[in-house]
Image (cartoon, rainbow, N blue to C red):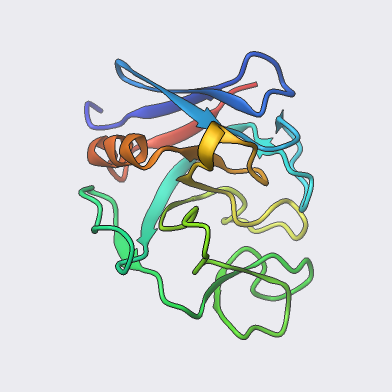
Length: 175
């Protein structure tokens, strides 16, 4: 299928916290998990999961950035937006609203990392308790410092990826 694209992410070794994201002829610098990449992902291990997933949707903070141009579904984030990371919770690895009784990451952040977020289908269907939650593509910190298990790019580069992405696009994190 000509519209299907693979976004491949690779580091130089399994422990690398920086890598290269490849999409067609683009080669883009990215940050990876603080524990590198792993086949067996566990909640809180800090590793980016090795495997291939579809891109589910894009979330963005309309008060900080413009709506991205993409063929993926796009929704706004709100001050009460959260993502459940509480193992055993019925909403584990799902979007929730704050104040949430269980452990939930705040999606409305002061550091701008989640001003533009791509939700990927890691551990969504089926959802396995403890197999990792909130694995996204999002904005990178200065210096591309390590993430908690996500893939992070500059805003310019993430927008380039989104402009080419479709519902058929897959994120492949390589060993």
